[in-house]
Amino acid sequence: MNCLQKSATKTYAAVRAAQLAGKSIGLVPTMGALHEGHLSLVEASLAECDHTVVSIFVNPTQFGPSEDLASYPHVLEQDLRLLEERGCWLVFAPQADEMYQPGHGTYVDVGSVAVPYEGASRPTHFRGVATVVLKLFQIIPADRAYFGRKDYQQTLVIRKMVSDLNLPVEVRVCPIIREADGLAMSSRNAYLNAEERQRASLLWQSLKLAEQMHAKGQTEVAVIARSMRELLATDELEAEYIAFLAEDTVQEVTHLEGPTVVALAAQVGKTRLIDNHTIG
Ligand code: PAF
Image 1 (spheres, rainbow, N blue to C red):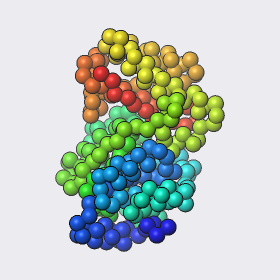
Image 2 (tube, rainbow, N blue to C red; image 1 turned 45 degrees about the vertical axis):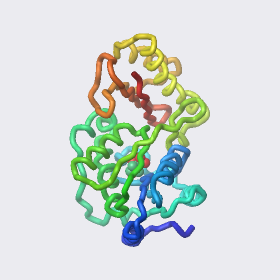
Image 3 (cartoon, helix red, strand yellow; image 1 turned 180 degrees about the horizontal axis):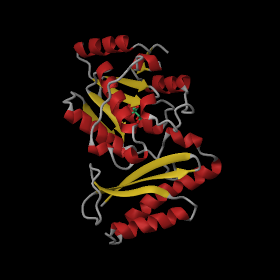
């Protein structure tokens, strides 16, 4: 496919030349194994920008030592075909040594927003995400960058980095895309066997339960969280955390008043899944 580029220098040159010719650039950073969630980000960029660049890079620095870096799905040919069909302008798919030279030692730490929840479970994860996203913004100095709402805390980390470092890019956060039974689309869903895949839909059911309880007048977070845990337990799922967060923050609330993000993580078999839903 002719829009594939592996060189950071050539990618930067192509993007700058297009910008100097008056074209706006949208960037969709991904780790590949594209699904409808990624493609919705691509569609959003295609609608708003003259040229859409998708990066495909399984970033080693955001994986912990016991995580799934080695087994993370790589399906570059299939991804390229999907992107070409959509009309993507350039796909940046570097080798690891193009992104991290031997002796790489500079990392981005965004502070407290990266500490709880996903940060507590995966202590070096957000440092790796912020570092690679900043590097991608350097290589592809896009006008807009598109991220999925499923990784709620990641979107806060990226917004914080963009604001703290005065990065000249507009961050767009797009809605979660779900399977017919509500499971949030994720490349990691591919790890689930048939029985796990069925149980995984309970994550969404528990988030819907929170919404329904709130709609019926329940405002006590502890009561809603207990019911969510009970529902998950009906199929032997245990949430690692269920957090009720004031919209656009990682501040926990105990009583529902304004818009609240209910975020959770749970292990389904060997696969750790996250999801969230805004209620109120
Ligand atoms: O959300 C992801 O797929 C990754 O964390 C990202 C933003 C592409 C950085 O590697």
